[in-house]
Image 1: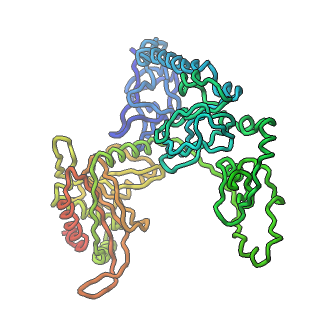
Image 2: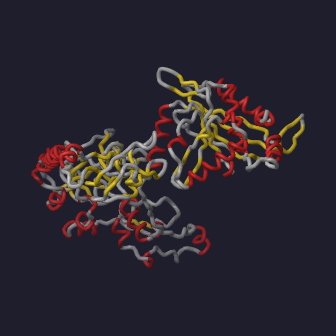
Length: 551
């Protein structure tokens, strides 16, 4: 009988795996123990073995695809066996799930038929512009109308500021980029509107907008308010009087505040034009779109009539224009990074963290390490000494060697120390088990072996599961001190900084010293401040008298 092969759970934190490579293809004979595929988990790339004999009848996952745990990957059975029933059973409900989507499309399309069935592009062709709440920042979801500069019935031009909008970051001006009469104001001063919600309508005087309002936010966004070649070119009929009544141009090249419309600023930025050299023709010397478009360097205001001395005093310093390019790259999130984000997010926002920092005099530890490395079979690092000292201190303070269990606290009587290791894609935390009973040489050899396996992505689940406390060391990068997020379900984590050569006070005199800072991050549900402080005091005594670790 055919058997379904599902994605296995290969680690305690795994929620899905990426099919890195198939070692068998449809039609191949397989035996129990054969490697079917390689699966990339959040921790490592691991082999997936077959537990059945037979023929590979079906493969449901392509190489490179992510597969949730327990999802169908393949089917094994007798050659020629009908497996369609198994396949349909595993995919049950998929066809039904597509039908509501079709209904949702109909429901989504239904409102578009409101408002007379006209899209915003069609409304724009009739001279009607629907003005929506613009997205004024990358985090904005809604804006508050701080002030309306126009009221219903007012004539507006494409460069007019309609309103001030308060976003989550600043108060900014909103322009309609439309010419006509303000027919409707949809949001009153002080009220909030969602991004893309209708805030105003501009069009020919007397136009009935009730049909448009009946559709709400339904008409498709066609970018018509920003279609410059339609809305920013007034007809010849309106342009002639505008030229006759145009105010005298006012120069902005006086070192004072430059007043310009947002559109004029954008065009000037795109063209590399210094607005200080542009004369504004709108009220108060305000620079508008046509001033920038008509600007040429030769049209800059002349200053030949001014005396030479006053000219030097009036000329503002010229800031060179630099035009840069905004760009970025994206790459898919690896399985390891997904789990790091999930686990650390859960830890930080679930466990109430607090931190305690202490300074350690490392003079004796440095001298002891030098002597130990003259006889040790492997080179012992300061991190190895810290791991050993932590394990011994935890035996004296079992409350720090604990974890939160909801309705109970789990006190560990063994000391399994997780050692945080950085790799190219993220972070591994292999575990040195029963570290309090191991020698410094044993701990050093074990940590080095874990480091090599971590870089090669050869760690197995048994290597990283079961820690009771974690040590994270960034001292080799010159970091003085830092805080870490607790590696759940541990109740605490130790952050180890660099050894710094600084002046210290000993016996009333200032002398050279070597100091290392340790920061203990605690889950306040299981470790109180006094408990954490007592643990650090014991750890300080052990590191400042390292001979006690060898006793």
